[in-house]
Length: 467
Image 1 (tube, rainbow, N blue to C red):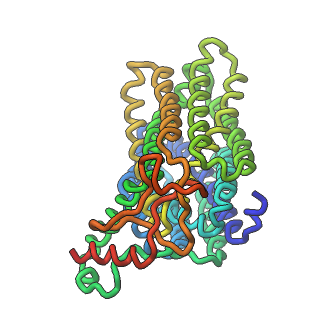
Image 2 (cartoon, rainbow, N blue to C red):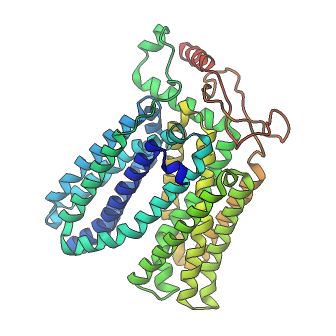
Image 3 (cartoon, helix red, strand yellow):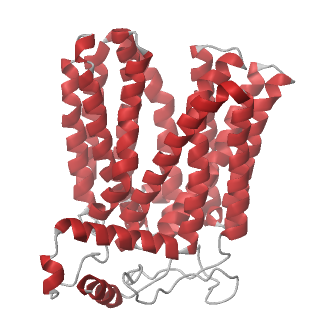
């Protein structure tokens, strides 16, 4: 992991992410507190959270099309600047009559983020190389959990002492600093192969921009569906995304009704899981590429689900808060193992020219399933009970882990750096991982998607566009 941090380009990306995440946590904690104290309305707080969720579902997948067209470093710098400027209208919120400004700001910030996140995930493999992908993602998980430990406490203090202006300006500063750090990256940050039409195709050049966006989006979805590794991971992400939507709603309810805790206990358990995430990040960095095997990812998912089930059910037999704290620490370890392993594998399996669309689609799907989980939890919990619904969530992780073990390919060939990968858009042959255990499965490397040479991609896209 230290060797990965010595990579200057990655270190700039990692440090920028850490600072930005810490600022986000300050705002994420401080803004709902401020809105509730200003309006004394739970509905106002809920609308703000809804304004954050909707762009993820509606825009996330389409944003990946543009991420695969644009310079990814420049995209991240510009989005950081937009995120900083977009927060400034919050400084005008002084009375309940101005709370509508927070809805617009939350919506705008979430829209911009849909471009930043795929660009970050698409750029990372080109900065560190496949051999350092797992340590890099482990370090990102460490920064996420460090921000999760520090940000909420810092945000609560700022909200109490300086009010809205304080945490808004802190988050603005974090975006500006992150943008400056990312601007210092010197590595190539353009997609390997531009997923656009061949330059000489006059009909395609004249084609309406919206039609081209539609074609590129469709090609990205075809690439995901035709690549076994990506499709299996997407199914697993869908299951866990649904569960996280349920957990987001019922977590405070569980602490209050089952553990008989209050706001302090809610924060303590969040911090406990963050501690487990830090430990898990260190362990995953030590394990290295082995965490991308189907057995490692699947067993981490099963362990996460089993520990979740223990968290939800042990209070009925052993009502000790310290035991819940220990389980929350423990569940963070396989949680990070599953996240880092699956994300590293997803990055390796996504051809560089299509990686933005792959991560955009994943983010949109997780957002949609999370929203469905949120609505479902709010609808059925009063009928089935908190623990019963949470048990369904825990069982979902176990099922996802089993599916990953059963369906992920054992071994597949790696994509050479000089190759560009992707689907043949309109009827051309797709070279892909076979769904059987026999065929063109190589003994080297983690599972990755089908590979095409650059000219094959351009020719097939041009062919599809001219039809």
